[in-house]
Length: 235
Image (tube, rainbow, N blue to C red; front, side, top):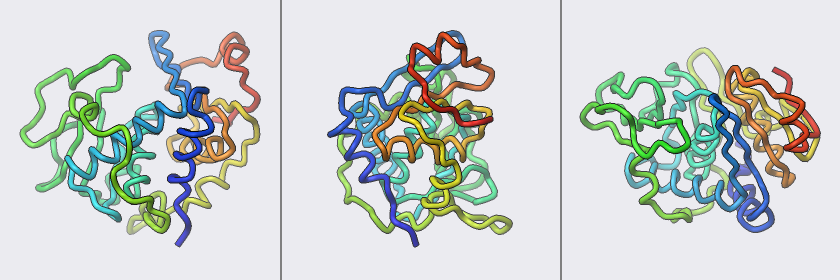
């Protein structure tokens, strides 16, 4: 069992990094989203409360992130971990709860699905949702800006849930796998979700800023200079 670092990281974000950028996202169509430490913490808290109250997730409930590398994927990971839930990055884990940006139709009876619209200004899922599927984008803003549950230190026991074929990934292994140093770190989507998540936790633990580029988005010299990037996660 490893210690869950997320409660400490979120506390640092809302107290020591409240007004400075913690997460900067560059998406397609010149989309740029900047979240301060306080705003990132608010999004994580809303997501944790949404998971617990809307999707009945309890400590130990695995939450599948059927999402591309995106700033909302990072929010979902923080929200799940804060609520004591491990995440899964594939359907192989058989998670009872799934956040998806692609297929909101439940894959198995009883699966709880949250439809996540990715555009920054999207206030709801753009199409009709299947019965029982929750519209995260429309509903999450109604939840509290602070996490109403306890600070889990021993749950989840693993950051990423294991499957029959692959063991789970501990928080320590997740963060130590990508020892990228620097105060402002660029993480391209091409590096993969697991590596971006590990880098994010390591960067935020030291009070730094993570700059994430979406799939196919070029990190230009102008961008790197504007964001004062000091290190890069290799793709």
